[in-house]
Image (cartoon, rainbow, N blue to C red; front, top):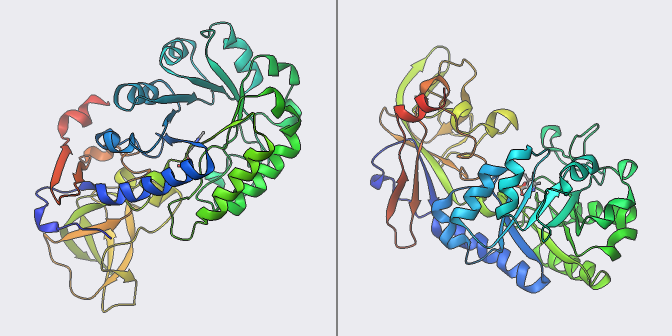
Length: 377
Ligand SMILES: *Cc1c(COP(=O)(O)O)cnc(C)c1O
């Protein structure tokens, strides 16, 4: 449970990651690692808040990066293992990536072949394959959808690449439970299992919602152990992102004004478009602490962002009492896939970034202003 005391917040908007909640997730992941004998990497794409890396590093084995900038961040602030996969590499970036990564995973055999000779000889090279099984709930987050550019299909696979690679990688899930993983692995083994003997590792990607309350952790551990028992030559990697930051904190905003042009709309100092983009593209309606669906409680409000985009609406909510100007609104579960995606669209400020320590101290680790807006244009 969140221990946030909003009277301690000096400035909004602010992302507040709660150390205790983060550690709770990390302990679950560590248990999977220890009991199943697998390695778990942090996927930086979903959670790159490096102010927490001293804590995360105690529990996980390293990071997976998607390009040079994430790789550098992992190298500078995390250490341990670094695996880098990108849908396509720029040769100049790859040279630097190769100096700091342990594994490099290519998306296609032609990419791999083009770059292979330039890699250091001790590099562990992998190929991302596409198991061609679509289970993702939303098409934009489905790496195995029709015509997906992500991963090599069995039709495009050529076993002569096995001389060059140590491992195969897939990423096929999105916010899913272990039953979905089982089906993907079944397809993976059916198509590629005959090549496992010549490999050293396989990587089951991300999208495992391991820290969600209803995730069947016992079944995952049993499943991974069973897979390992059949393929004892293979080291097994998982690389979740969302599961690390899942329900570990909030985005707190302030009501700036309330307008009533048919519906009561509270205009906040945050933005769906600029600060919580997944609420627009997934799309979903973030939970607000103390609020319910429209109509369930007495006082109904639309919550809108502070940009001039007409559609910058976070959602419609009901409250027990009237909202007031200056009051704080707490959006739940705003740590993963949020601060990695923020923009200064329309010149609005990026939210501060803060950590609520286990001792209750609220520590602001980043503040932003005009310079960040100017710097990106
Ligand atoms: C996005 C991604 C992940 C992490 O996915 P989550 O859904 O955040 O767990 C892992 N690996 C790859 C290759 C990805 O693209």
